[in-house]
Image 1 (cartoon, rainbow, N blue to C red):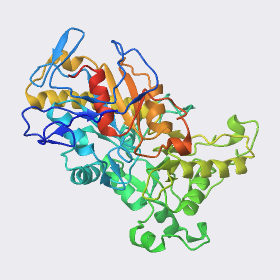
Image 2 (tube, rainbow, N blue to C red):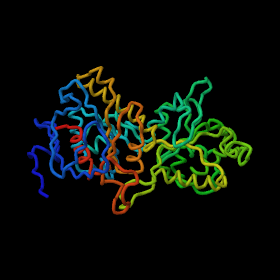
Image 3 (spheres, rainbow, N blue to C red):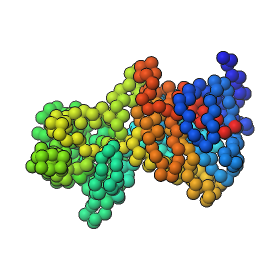
Length: 451
């Protein structure tokens, strides 16, 4: 196979810098098409050579270009770790790819199962690392959708197969704004600040409970100094907890597991109590979690993630699996642990991301001075989910059914957690497998007729 000729030296990483008059996107595509959905036009096999999509493309008889008042009918959603960054360093081609999309006002969002920082802090950090200006307006991390629960509930909806009940505050309004919530994560004190920034008013951490009831955990705490420095007084000696949130990957599994299990076995969510309904077959679910205990929320279920070590490391999904295993031992396997898990691959997160993406698309039109009310009202035709994890990124895009009729196509890259030699063929089949994010966007642009 011949090596494709490079575009002029003015082009960096095969994607033109902002000052380039040609603004071409030259990408060496090593895409491996896996399945052929119907995108509205025949899917062309991505070549191993060079294709150079330019500023104009045509879809269904409509021409789009950088000065058109009509927004492109497609967009992108990018995972971060393993797609744009590896061990906090940009993956080759990532910066140039985002620059190209920004220059052409092609909408994209960053959709990650990561968390533990406020959205503003994370976006500022990503902007520095990638060398690209980013915004919280097109950024969704694992716990971002929890903001919805401040003033409303998720009602009778299905998440991870579990039906949620309506949550109401003392004024009869849905939401947890004035309720006691327990939060944990890699740094519970920091997670508390994030939750408070979201609007939750009464946020409790495991450190608060341990400080008030040291006998609750009869071992040397793993993060004792941190707990001493960050603990706050409880609102009462034994407060009622209305919800439990795991914001990101916990560090002190032993303490967190003990407190969470205690609350799931409690009466009415009151710390230090035990429900008389537990294990009683005459009650629903054999009485387990049938006495107004707090609802348990996880922000993602990723078992593994790609870090600096050469093998994948445990993520929040491992903590959830451990908690479920202990729960099964306690209940004798007679009651499944009722909880809600969001993040990729679950539909609630993809629906949230689609709404954010649609709003961002409209914002790009307004900022560019090319706002078209008709275009803004039209839903996206297609979103390309670019990820490195078949169990979250690919599965989520494949299974999500958009209420707007938007198609989600999945692109699996080889730069992250998935490794064919180790893992074999992905369990969830992507639309295409490519080498990296640059190849992913190049393949998608060619598919859209951006030439």
